[in-house]
Structures are given as C-alpha cells and as structure tokens.
Image 1 (cartoon, one colour):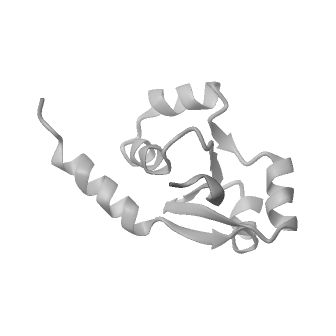
Image 2 (image 1 turned 135 degrees about the vertical axis):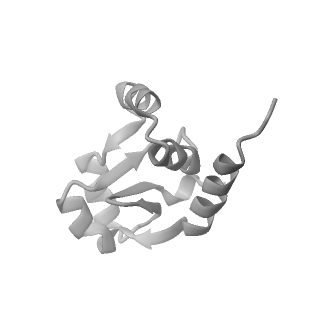
Image 3 (image 1 turned 135 degrees about the horizontal axis):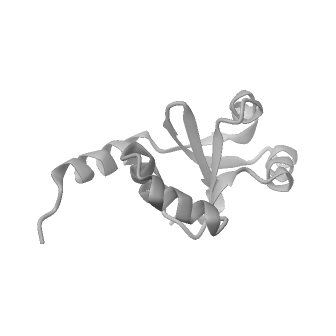
Length: 104
C-alpha cells in the first residue's frame, strides 16, 4: 500500500496550524457562519484534511451523522459563558473548532 506524500504534507501543515483560541475571539467568524463544529468523536486534523481535499462525500456523511456542522447554539453559549478555549484550525474561509478538553 502506497502512502500519498501530499496527504502527509497536508496533515503536518495542519498540525502546525492547529492551536487553542479563546471562543470570544471567534465571535466575528461565528456570526458570519464560518465556524464549523467538529465532534469530539472525530480527529480535528482528519476533518481538516477532508476539507482541504474537498472530500464532499466524507463531509456529507459526517454532517448526516451530526459529527460536523454548525456550532450548536447551546455549546456556543456555554463556551462564551465559560470564556472557554477551543482547538481550532483555519481552512479559509472556515474555522474548524473542537472542544479543547477532548484532545489527547
């Protein structure tokens, strides 16, 4: 089985670009609808790779399962009230976010 080096390069780049950020700092992007919630059940980098590769089928599957999509309003409010930080990676124009407490 051959490994696609471009996939490895993409994952490495995304890994370097992934960081924690305070939810308050993402409010402008959230208001514009540019923040994508990634369930704790998924690897944030794998979702980023799929978005970068424009893997529509994979994204639609995750969306259908409720694993990727808009940030639920209750979660957004909870993060805001707690002044929480989230894991984030930018894949313009999108900002993928995941609850910070779930990353290993």
